[in-house]
Length: 342
Image (cartoon, rainbow, N blue to C red; front, side):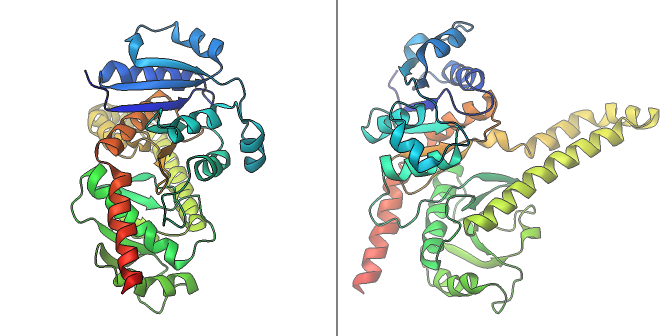
């Protein structure tokens, strides 16, 4: 069968490496025969882990990278000095077209720096944003940016909105997705200088379905499909989202187990409860793509387990099949050039 996507996977990145990346790769190739995964990292360690499983061996290849970039290392220095690290080797594979995408649960800073220095931005893209899918009452929304650009300008947010709209329409399948800008109120006079400057620019964009401002309390209800903000705000939203979800699940479980009556009720409600809680499990949606690069980079949580790794690989397949980078270039860069000419 023809290979539709080749994914370089950092086998050394994250709290659960190499076990989680290796098992995630194994599960991915067992489910799909049309993908190939390159496990990048220390060869002996990876092969020892792979030996535990039975899998189609032609779909997994080990790429030796003896060095590891640790979480606490200064990102720029690490990328420049550790040329044989799993992050640098994996990204170079994307740069040299040996792989279509790179996935890592490793150092966020190193991944952001490496993405720009090694793979590079698409010509005309000013800042690449991190954009995770977050669960909502109605499905999922794309939070863009959640960690890459804490000092973004209005022109950057406009590009974020356009890239996010393309991603949601082509990868998630939401036609004409609703785009909103995070604000402290719905009125135009509210917000900081960045928000006030960005609002009219987004309203002028004819290629997106901009619906105005969105308050953070409306995000979990599915108030918009693309949630636009700079990275400081986005990261606060994301971390609060994750922490609150985990707390609620913990409190609900405690309450259900507190008395004999509640335990009986829990047994009856368990199937429906599991289904509901699963819909708010972000791991099923994969990682956060770094949009606007010349190749795909996906950052997964440092605590990612095999399920999130596997789903991040499948996310790369969809990204590649839908030619998201081609659409970003065509719909964003070309339209920007036309606007400048006018």
